[in-house]
Length: 264
Image (cartoon, rainbow, N blue to C red; front, top):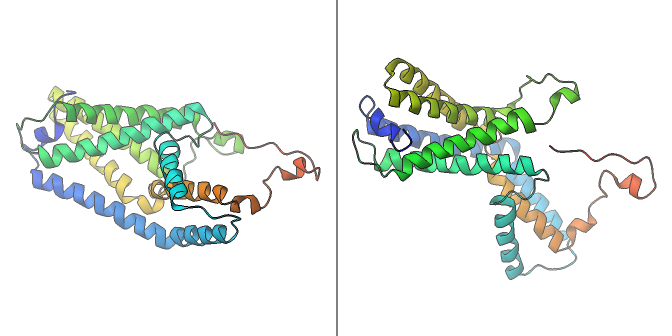
């Protein structure tokens, strides 16, 4: 199972062209949904205005070389290793989900576009990466959802309460879960269950990529830029001109000390 291309097996009933068209449509949905999200929430406008305001408050100039170094550090720490998470458990869960998703998407594209035909000889590395990626997403996603997620019960809400922000992680977990189950059942030769699980896999995939405007999917594209801008504002001194943090009253003797929020 781990070394079998599930999509080449599927080509017996669904043409490679149909599968490739579906992948292209999902890509277009992500692009269109991200653009819609930017326009509707005015995220880009806010980001550039905030960057301009921070630059005007800067006390020193940051050279191009310094910015390049900051960019490299941002990619290495905030993107590749998710160093912004203060909780080790949450950081590991995030990295499992992120890298698992990358492996899952890339290997899916390679198998569908490069080895789509029934009986085609697919290098074993690609289906192996596909299964490993799906499993990593499930491991990180379920770990986050059941053990690390913010304790909504402590806030007076039901632990079963769902909001739009949950759409991304739930649809992502569902997509990889149904993908793994479909692959297992397909290799066992159970056609009925295979059809049911494949249908659920496709539906959850459509929700994942089609729900970009209502989920946190687009957030991943802004996060690196925001982290870079934050580091630049620290380097040019503009962040030092910001209002004091929420716990400032305690530090300056202006009131009762407030506990900082805890992230799990």
